[in-house]
Length: 329
Image (cartoon, rainbow, N blue to C red; front, side, top):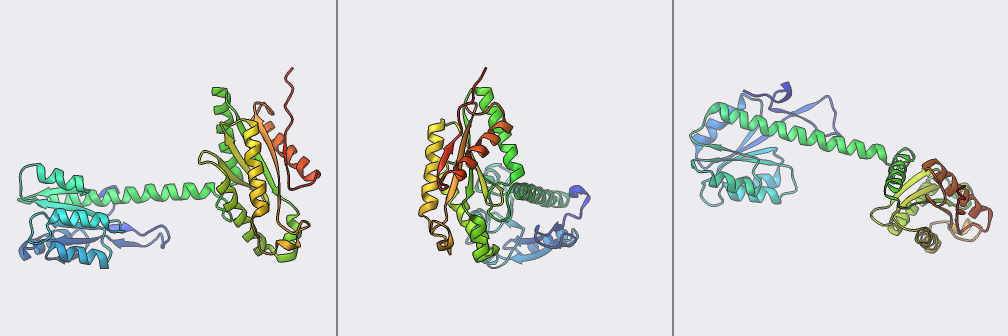
């Protein structure tokens, strides 16, 4: 018998938000209209540590799936009423993650292929071979475990890239993205723009309303920023009340236009308690720089965009400043 990764195949780790030291049995629903066959399969698979339940028809199986959680369904193909293919199709429509293994007495591949097209995880042919039953079920359990590990890996990978408050990209991942985009722009002789943005007089807002209100304002601003950019742009929380937007593949004039749209939309958005601000509303200042027009490297691009931002803050605030074109000797 094959046991995935040296673990009892009937045991599956809990979800990532549960106690990682605990495990739960794999829940398996056996569906067959013959009592003898259901009991035979239960005896075979009970030895593997699965938590097993039984259904005498396809209709009963679907009702059980709608009311309870199962990891795997082992269903006969030929049954009165809803057959095994109907169970496969119905299981795919449910919001739960369940794998279906079909059992067929036909020697041809047509029924098996049909079930796989509908979404079955695997199939078992009759007459049964006990080892084959154990191996196929164990392999499906292993595939479920691998899928879960991959999903959790992607979940934690994505979590490590995001700022916890705003759900924008964080400072560290911003630098990785910018490095990639500058390298691509250099390789293909294209532009990449960087917009740096800072909330005007944000300390005054925090002092008046407290940091929880400031956090709410930062979250709302992050939603505004995401509405203003394209799918290929990257928005990051650079630090504190400062944000950065990587804008590839457009010229500086277009990047300035995007920055101006952001400034205007923030100006028009209502933030709770913004009447305490000097202009009576929450506003932002923005600096724009482009590679290679304003900078020769990723580091210089950040520096030039930051300089443009502080030039905007030194002027009237609530405005956009574009970095000056660099001079190449």
